[in-house]
Image (tube, rainbow, N blue to C red; front, side, top):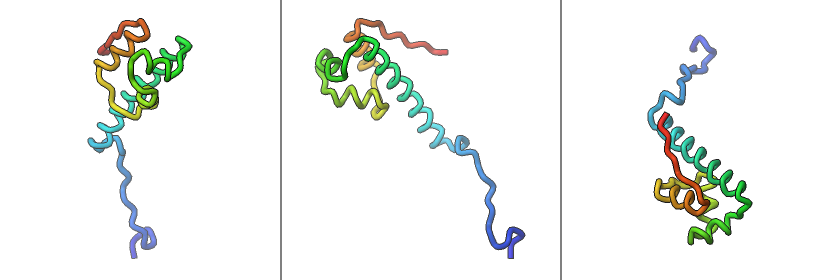
Length: 94
């Protein structure tokens, strides 16, 4: 019998120490940041997803995916969103 009464106890590991998880977490975090920014920009302009989609010539479902972080987005697409909203895209490395 083990000292723990037959239960095998494993040392817990920090999930962030696993490279694959850390990479996916970082990617999800980035997607969430741009998703929140896109939605805020659109709602501040008083636009619906459908209206923004019409301006950009993309389906409303694309806007929804971008706003929920469900897809990777290119810099080119971010720039098109900025242009559609009469804004300038700025990328800042900190």
